[in-house]
Image (tube, rainbow over all chains, first blue to last red; front, side, top):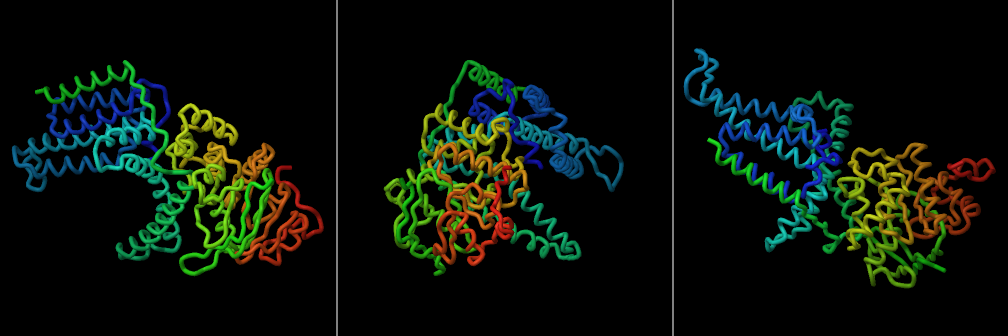
Length: 251
Length: 249
């Protein structure tokens, strides 16, 4: 469901029209800078991400709801940092040694991960998967020894087949539960019963996929994406540079 | 005029199992051929030789007089193949991307691809779903997308392996209507089935395979009477002394 909820949605917003290369480069740059960002830069990045999601007609609330399990993970990060960082105790309790410094560092760490996820979501929501694939191929092309077209095809197939494999896994799980797999206590055995048939089905699917791609003339020389850079894209690149500068410069 | 000529075609698998034995067959341009047989009779193996997905142990397959192995790209462009499992045939992340996959591999100019994909999606009634993820389509829609992916390459022959498998009544009718429309437009159709009921009324030739050999070949109304002897179920209408009616009525 996550893959479906966070997939590309066709629309005609400014963000949808931007060049995929700029969006991908922006995502990489913002992710790298966010890893070392301080709290003020993080707050700016968080609200910018929410604003851009709204601009791309992707409800920020819906995004946060869809990320609920990821938010649980972030809450675990916050809690762990709060309880394990030495500093001034928030409450005088030996069984809950939460510190002020721990809360700050926890929020910083969880916030960084949240901002990166929101920007990644923004890119996948507003960019056609085929454009992401072409952008990856474009960035990899100058690097010698990397088969850029194959790498881009692999990314495309991964995006396409994650929901298929998840569906197959859910079907297998139901079939096993229908035959009382829940009665088995050993989790390793349960995992084997699910994992082995899933692996076999995935290989069969991959084999059929290879035949189907061959039948449709898959090869190394196909029509490539035609990039059209407009003034709007250059402006976006300018705004992106300014945003990156602010992330570094904010005290 | 024959568009496909098969002479002395034999094939065996790596484990020694014989798939096809001495197949001699010609298929006329614009014909509608039904290929039937029990499981393991060699139907899918034969189809995979038509565009070079399998290489013959002996014999040749010619398309318009040219051996398939001489120009594989031409063979795959000429003979569009729709596989039984649509889910593992769809490679695009959106309906449009999937239909464009074949034409892009053929290195066509972008304008021609756009035109061809639009026409193919329009023909199968999926033009309104061009931006949807294939994973969200129904079984019938996925099958129609698989057909569109092949149609976008503008093939002269369309080969369909069990096109009605796992489809409900409405889904079968939709796919059948597409196949009949393509045939009327002049495309050569080869449909591989093990249940004759759904498609026989539209065919002009029925070929039955058994253990890798052609067991019977001829007009459907004659050959169908022998079907049960080769492990293919006789349609109920024929069993009752009537004729098979179209599912499109």
